[in-house]
Image (tube, rainbow, N blue to C red; front, side, top):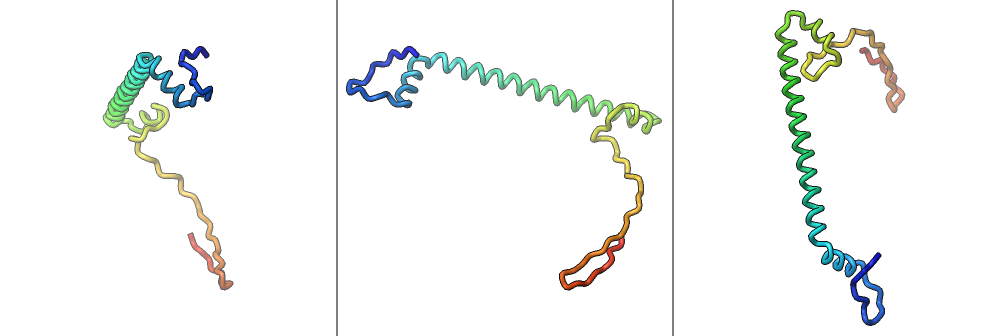
Length: 114
């Protein structure tokens, strides 16, 4: 690297903090520009993400209203693809649950009914 900083008179190596201070003095304007540009890009990306999520939320609301307004809500829900959070949850198919036993530390065994 091409350092234009003067070497210390007593031949001691320059510390990292001294090098950082010298770099900051030499490139102050470039650093301010780079930081500002980075913040600007981050702000634009955040705004786009917020706008995109807002439009997706509006589309979900509109499609839910369309499904609720139709006469065949079951057919429309099945044909629309994956279910959304606004669709009512279908209860699971009933199944038989078998009982089990529990053994206590004192040796007692009891049946637990479903």
